[in-house]
Image 1 (spheres, helix red, strand yellow):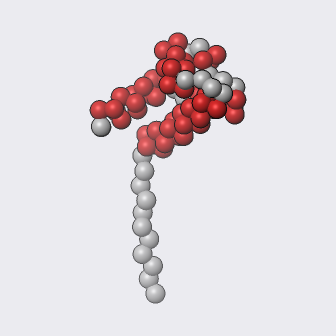
Image 2 (tube, rainbow, N blue to C red):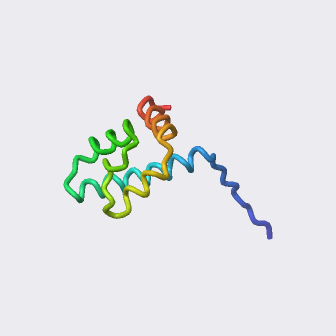
Length: 83
């Protein structure tokens, strides 16, 4: 009997982007739950790197600080441009 094994390949960039997206969605949900405008708060954080834009609810502030802002901006621009 022979078994066929499928090799799964992935890039580190894809994993990083998936992690960033998961974190961003978690932060978005936490901000929304607390009654904030999540888009404005996240943009404020990205532009200023001031963590007080992000609530501590559901550990959102700690999570967002794990994300490199430059990498996040690159991923967002690539996504927006469809690359």
